[in-house]
Image 1 (cartoon, one colour):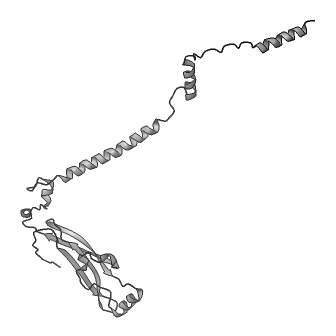
Image 2 (image 1 turned 120 degrees about the vertical axis):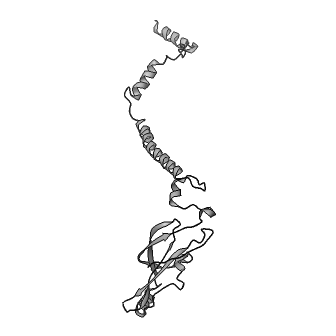
Image 3 (image 1 turned 45 degrees about the horizontal axis):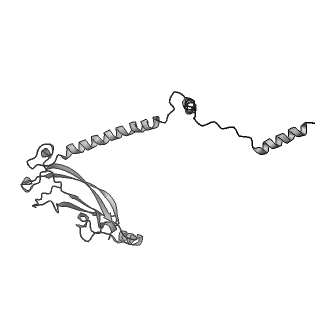
Length: 212
């Protein structure tokens, strides 16, 4: 089903979206909502294929779901543009329903006039509007990151190999060698003790007692 539309804007704020609301028939022949979906229109000219995931809101209780199945009045959004907004989406209970593939042919005009360069060919060459070379810096960052990853295991292996036992004398033999090679201590020798007067008197008395 081809659709042709033209949009005019001076800024990318509020970029247009395609909102889909699919209807079908249930088991009883009632018209019910089969899915909601939304996708932004691409900002790059040319043909692009988008896959839109559809979802349907669910009733809050099992009783309401059963009544809606009998009467053909399923839970649905009052405003069909709600899927294109983010207000209140976090409290809405939904269930995925299917996927729709949309093919779009985009034509842009006067984008460079307002300072936007989105043509695919200009992303790989110097543009009329000077832009920083994001691709080069990203590649350099990736290369530096890979080099760091390659260096990390080498440093770890070096740290692990350092405490390994090296060939040669053990620590005990090394300590013995150091003690043997060290010069002798220069402590003064102990002086001989002098005999006291009491000691001499006792020896003389012993000698006198021995003599007849």
